Length: 197
Image 1 (cartoon, rainbow, N blue to C red):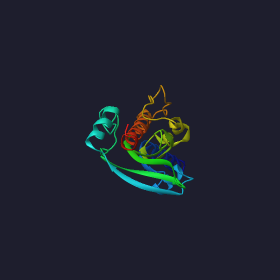
Image 2: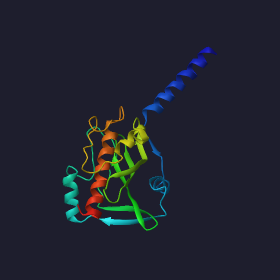
Image 3: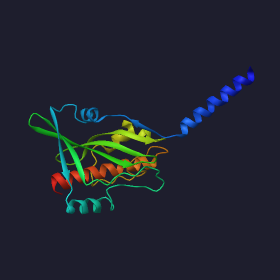
Image 4: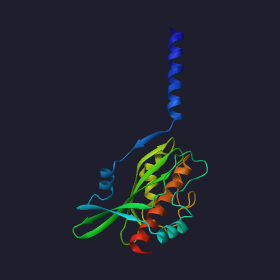
């Protein structure tokens, strides 16, 4: 009987270690809950879909290092499509525009990471952000407030270098850099489309 318990124990350890080594897709927030989290005081949220003009595409790529998708060396993520059309969510309270949000997906280490970012409509700086879903082994802490709060008040002009301006999540540098790129991209797109900067 002791040998049977020993075999069960070894099988249990093997199962745990195989579970730890896998990456899993995790959905944290569905779209409705994400918008509510971004704009808890909004009376109304409306969507506006905007297609980038050829000039906006060129300017965005220039400001973002040549691409709208940030693939990094060492990433095993599935491909993320370079979109040319974006849906912005505009929140109002009374007659005042209180924020604008964009849902954006970028490749992480093991799979795409989907974010929602809420911006100040006048400055294009981050008011709030959240991870909606990810497929990561060690990247879960990028969804925590301790990491995300570093980006509040940041915009496209801010330096967002991992290990310099932004504290990376330990063991998840690619996911951390993915977040930095997403913040710069969303702010840049809003500036180009709405603020005409």
